[in-house]
Length: 265
Image (cartoon, helix red, strand yellow):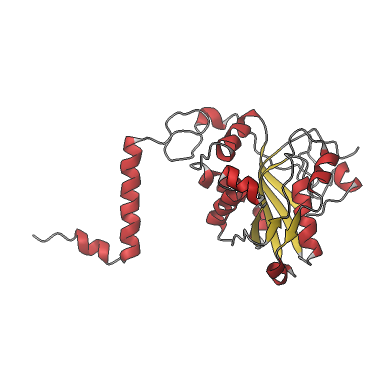
């Protein structure tokens, strides 16, 4: 009796055949090298999945939070409440959101991506970031990864912000444009600098590529980065886009450094 398997596969087209072959290959690979949790090293169901023992240690950011910068409040407030920092100095971006609190647990995930090149958790990061930036992502726009200077890019070999942007694109369908912004000069690391020093460090560092100006005018953009510390880098990029007549600029990061915020002070 003639097997029906080849015909049943062919009727779905060559792309489906390639997809099935890739799926089978991944299953074989998983049998030989079982996927591991990026935090604990314990076996998990799929690459990048966080083991329950590590999951409970991650802190996800949600309401109540500042309507502009997304800083979490310690007690429930109305949705449009703005923190004292944003009242005193309105950010250049329209809104910022982050998926996780940046602490010892999320730091391990980010450092594994940033310095060890571990990319298996990117699909999971994309889903977390989609949840955090749901409102702005639903409104549409172009995903803009924070650019690295060419010198830093050669040293690191990849831009983690671009990888995260593609991860968000994969779960939202939004386009990624890594060539719209450019870093005009290298800068010292932001590590160890306070908010004022960070703003000075990135002042005048970013620019819109000449041929991209027409694409910026009247557009909506979502800046993508790994960590929101003081917001200085995101603000510097947002200022450049707003000066080029962007209609709306928001920011979305995987994690955020959190300090206690009292909106009444």
